[in-house]
Length: 308
Ligand SMILES: *[C@@H]1O[C@H](CO)[C@@H](O)[C@H](O)[C@H]1NC(C)=O
Image (cartoon, rainbow, N blue to C red; front, top):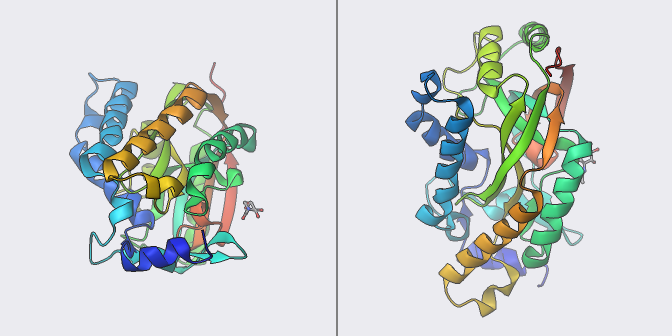
């Protein structure tokens, strides 16, 4: 594939892809709305809630198709080449300043666990996508928990206010227990995001973590980006057609290939167990800084308690 092969094809036929965090945002936000009553339903366990949510997310690709290959879905769509460019033969994000910076609270997955996942994902997907894929940096695997400010509802804050938020989050983490988690499944969304969806074995449930953060951060946006129960991390973003596309006549064959690759990955890493012991308060100075290796300021807090 030539230097601009993938991308020039995109700029004409697949020109616009709804790709930024907005992709995942709206996708999950919609689900959050549909599931908004569920987190208060104590008769259903949180892990059952998560399973149902993951079932729904898993169906998304079949229901909507590979939207990331079609593009031009909304007037707000961004062209792929607005976000990624090819520099020295590799895909490079085009970073945009976030103004005001996004303030995200995330659970951090250490490299002890992320590197084996990264390697599995890369070995299965890289051969089929050449440069049309972006892999999440394995040093920055994270689970989004709660935003003090996000790009849909920006809440500007002074340095003093930010320091007050940091102190409140630090204090809240002292009452959270380290998590043991297990990878429930990997799914590919219609927007091309390869997501790891996790269950909690022990420790403080994400629903409770988010509730504690909401209490600590009273000025945060009312509407958060995700369902309260979800525990997910992004592994990769598909940016274009698989390489063997020329030999795949119909788009259903492409879909078939996606399912096969996801199944192969699941076979390898489903059931993978990990421990989470840090919460990060992250100021993202670039849009999607955690996902795209942008500029950010990170404060790291250990979760205060161990649970058996
Ligand atoms: C991945 O993230 C780490 C930590 O922020 C950084 O040092 C490293 O340069 C990043 N890797 C790439 C390929 O950008």
